[in-house]
Length: 553
Image 1 (spheres, rainbow, N blue to C red):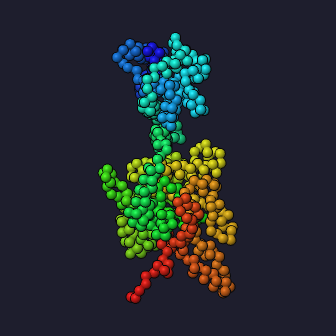
Image 2: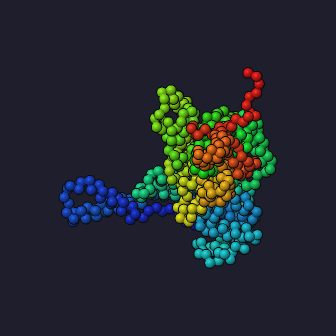
């Protein structure tokens, strides 16, 4: 099969030219000579030395070229598999459906095979029949392969096709080899950038870029399951119901540690993007921190049938704090658990008893599976790379981002408009939630128009800078504390009646926070009332009158 051998030989990588190899050797020699720069050398002598080094290097390379035992490395490929696949498609177009979901023209090593596959695919997808005769006209002007024209070669491919049974195996072989070639290119790029790195590109950025490219390559490697039988979907739904039945509290998702909020949400569901929005000083970060602590504290695992540890309650929590430092975040949690004012901790005004309590709480929280990244101004790509790393190393189960307006998009989207950038960020967070199969809680600011209304309760239209936040989110919750607004409307004490009405209003709203569920794909909307202790920045279950214990004591 001379034609096949001719096609295969097109892909041989001969390697660098002699001049490309000689120049670096000469540069290396000159660098070596530079170490002895104190020895005076005339210009003529230096020129003669360089020429001698070039001649020696050239002779050495010529001796290497004459050695037949030194093999040239070829990029991984299988031309025979490409030929068998194309032949099978040309004799039976239905075989194209078996590989169309994961194979594309770029995966072929031989450029001519890539052209044939692309032309064949376009004909089949347009409802036409692809045969050597119907695609002949597209290749009449192509350069011949040796003594054979391209249409003749296509006819030979179809004539030598024996079966379509193994067409999917051929396709996956071609795909896997293409991925290996991409890995080689990616590795070469990593080496080149590391050798000649720009000043404004630190190693950390290079690592994140390489990780992102590797993950993109891995994502392309997923062939996709296509349509799923309804029976399989029913099995997954039954598994979810079983987990809800077996888990304490009857939840299908991760418990937030707040009874009424869990009752409305059914827990934090895997792959959900949950947006927690509110105006400044409403308690967004406080609520997110409380949920993070409750989930991490409840974390328990058990060994499954395959010998792996799986979470039965709670989760490992990753917290991206783009606004506060990790120290400030930790202080909030310690203040909440120790029931000590965070302001007193910052000012050093705590008593000896409170200090001992603080130390005890800190010791108890040492093993908490809560991981904080307080890097400011990171991009959505960097956040995703770090979240994947935490998932791989620690088994991430809940991701919290405080807050999404402080994230940066890609350079291209950022230059368009802020709305497009926020759209990219929310789309990326939703994709990350589905990819890692974890709930993602993203905090968000609200527009200032909320404060201009008589009713200060936020609405979906108040989400700042982009409608994509509402569109991409599975759940949208608003934190609202009426106490904040009533407290700032205090009348003068000289107006006795007005001040008394204000005091009565303060008594009704003091210490109460509302979580308004404005959108929920899996359940109803509504309002959940919680107890808020401002001194300790803590949200907890509200104790209503009907929940108080009854009986004679």
